[in-house]
Length: 491
RNA sequence: CGGGGUGUAGCACAGCCCGGCUAGUGCGCUACGUUCGGGACGUAGAGGUCGGAGGUUCGAAUCCUCUCACCCCGACCA
Image 1 (tube, rainbow, N blue to C red):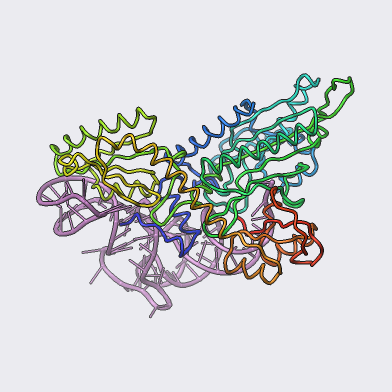
Image 2 (cartoon, rainbow, N blue to C red):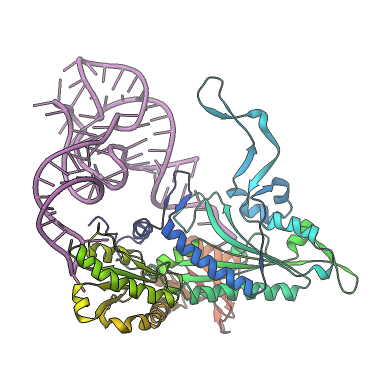
């Protein structure tokens, strides 16, 4: 008791927040809009970081680190960029505090005003392109393929654990190239990396696509994204990859000498994913008993719970449990043997289900007599008794099965929740009664997009890259359209 | 910034309208005992500036004024 969480069906939002807190992932900080990521939540993030970092390195990227502060003048250089971020920036104006003369506490020392204000980075394009100007002279200096793991601050009006917080952790890749073709290829390559990560690690099927003009990144020529669908039928943007063209090169005057001896502006990309992926992971797979973690991202693969009445039984059970744990660890698995005598087995079962540990093994006196253990999988809740000697060998395969099953389940849901619609009435009806993704024709204008958003709160999530050409008429204006785009209500 | 709401034990809340003895309940916490194969139970106990300041009153968690903080809805949101 007391650990129960709100049911998904009752209030999805509340269920999500409850789950984040009860599973010990994160909590609201006393600092406005900020989040404290607790050890268990952070260990899942670390697994994501490890997997992504490997994928970045495998595609030729290196990590580096740039300053937290952006001089205000840097921000001013790219007009659409500043327009996009101006409203959500935290700004450092002073560098010193002092005690108030009337003893009322600490105040900002008015004498310590900065000549030029510093913006706490909402993203690092400007700082990094300022460096790229110094680093690039010749085509021989290109490409530059850099990634940065860091925190950024965006002063959002309303925040929500993991999905939108004032400060969040992310990675941002920033590349510079000699040709447009190369930069476009990089943009699409990283989109693929994100999609692969989402599908193979998060077990979340995503739709790759391009953002409409009004939804694209401030300063980008094209923004590509991966869109996932959550269990309440709302869309979540899980990652973006931007083709910057020569916009930032122009703003920061980054030119290079080509092979032919001519001067040209360099071509750029940037791409990022954030701790929002934690939100995606939770909302895509969890059930009313708690998290369901894909084994590839689970900090603990297998938990062993001993069942015992007294010290003697614990000792006998522990011997077997440790033996099994050692075998599993030899196979490269993260195993926890929870031999606490302060909690009962039932409590532990519930706790590890809440935390989404993929496999649980229970060993008790009965098993000692029979030479067995009880193996339970989190995703389906199935339990079966297995021979002690055969368990260790069977677990890696079981984990693979779980990973695949979680993905298949999410895929099935996504497919069922993706509806082609051909009239505006159907559009509104499906949106309200079913939710999910809608595939509809759109006339390509910002006006229509804005009107639909205004009337239904649905936005164009993306123009899918793999959408087949199909003649049709815009659901809103009736004007001709060449392919369907993806609509949905989003987080 | 507009609309609404909430501040009472570590957490969740009741009490407030209609002022009155020592401020309650559940979870959690501590001790002991019985339990232990799906979130145990019993007994005893600890824990409170009732968000803050001022006012009305014989008496304020309760009424009045001011103030602070947080939450929700909207606007905003690579």
